[in-house]
Image (cartoon, rainbow, N blue to C red; front, side, top):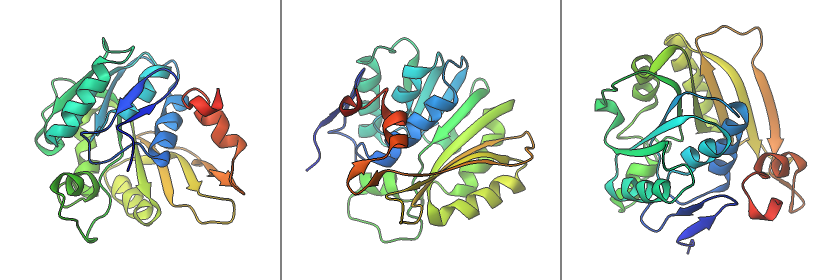
Length: 238
């Protein structure tokens, strides 16, 4: 059974109320985003924040003001508690609601999401976990189309997706005028296929997408890339 909390160097993520717990690929995505925008100052929206992990990771390395929306009430309450207990409580706030009906008061500079991604797969009898994992409530189409009303003209947005949903996401994004500018392909080990993709989009055309092809462990040992990326966060990498 997962612990009720996950301790990072500068903050703690309580997760007892949330259906989806802290996991390695989400930690990688949050650290990847924070590295990309380190020192940035702007307004960021985290869609489907869950425990608030991504928002907390980005807050640690940037000066962004962050709003994090969550549809499931228990997860929203969990994120709200984690934000208020963090060193950045003055610039992160949780919002309870459905992104599909969300009407922003202003446009954002950055939008991030680790969305539900088991579309059309078997669902469980746990309604909270279904909301967190399955996209019957939030589809890629509605999520990506929604970026048009959420972002400043020069804004950027990023998704964490499983390998099989990478190509459909890029196709939908391109149809809506977005360009893939950066990608991180995550493997469990050097010989395995990528199982997660960190994707960063903007309106600006690029000559060539920047790509990283990385792995987490080799023979049970964390890769140098993994250690460098997570060094600001993991207690084991201090």
